[in-house]
Length: 132
Length: 353
Image 1 (cartoon, each protein chain N blue to C red):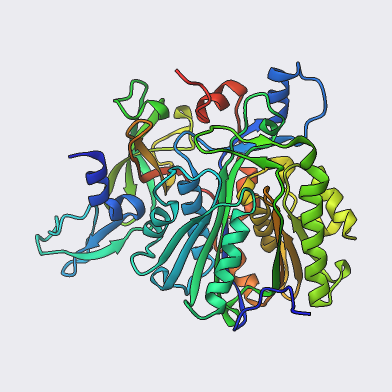
Image 2 (cartoon, chains in turn red, green):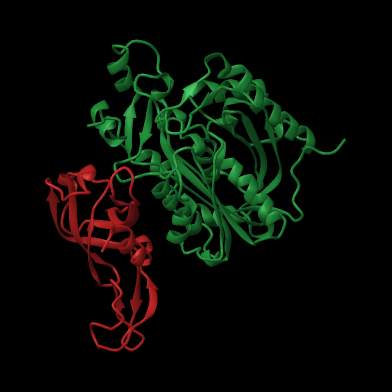
């Protein structure tokens, strides 16, 4: 799928961490998948995550795929959100050597990717060391 | 004589405010090292530089989230206008404001638009938001001033052209943390600074920069506003002026009869540089972070081309409870990572390969 189409379709989850919550068992779900992974009940009620979490694990990318050269080197992390789900995202505003497992982080909306000089700019969630 | 004040049909004020300043700092000494052999005075100590994944959209989003955090009773879906003033919108055609509105949950029943007036694009959006709410068209409006300012390598502006921004939620006075007592605008056609379409860097009209532009418009706007309101410099606890460097706001404050202690809290240029459309508005967030209820603030912006918006604000009891709900401007100023000129060149896309 093209970058503009994908980012447009996913804009609610990418811009502001909108997932879902299971009305039956209360499990917060991210990314949204319309079915609860815990109890398999239909789950389509939107739920905005707080954006707070901590680094579960991480790896630093020095040889980025096309479209990400501008940001390298960057660290990609598995972030455990405080509501439970695990998300994969870039870390930002942090040097690779400053990252550690368990580091408290918070969501920010940043540039994810550019389609060259003429194309669209995709924005979405990244995580940075928590302020204050 | 018809009043020069811009009047609203009902009283309005600032409901929430928020700043954002990127983490990276370029010391002015680094610019001097590259271009002057380290000789000569610099207009600021250092400036804030956006990281490689930041632009006016991302700066506006974080500032707006901080403003919303300070207005916890405001449902973003009730914001009827989202306006972003900047001279560094990431797209020439495609609004910054729609991306911002989507990111804060204000879409789809919202007026959205980008404003342009050099360094006063942000206060222009704020003035419009005051009018929009003041006329009753909507209960809340969001006004942002933000920039990732362009400075030509080696140009005098490279010391100061910085990144940052501030956001304000405007709403009815009874919910405000600071009530708008009055505002006016003073505008003339003055060729002090411009950037033509498709140009990467601005040009400036040398001798027009100081006296006929910055000083003329700020003093005229400030004096006309104070005359219309029957106030004088002694009536203000704080004053914030557009700050392209440190000396200009200090000088214009003196010309208008303000003392150094009245402008200290809102004068951040030495530590973050000139955030253009964010400049005066970020200064105001720093003042609101430390003001007490019942205090009076004068805000006067300046934008090249040229014009000034002057606003008189009075803080309310609601301020105290909201100050601590988001990171302060001082928190962002203190969060700093120094970079050298080489990394700056890479971050700001000045190296064309």
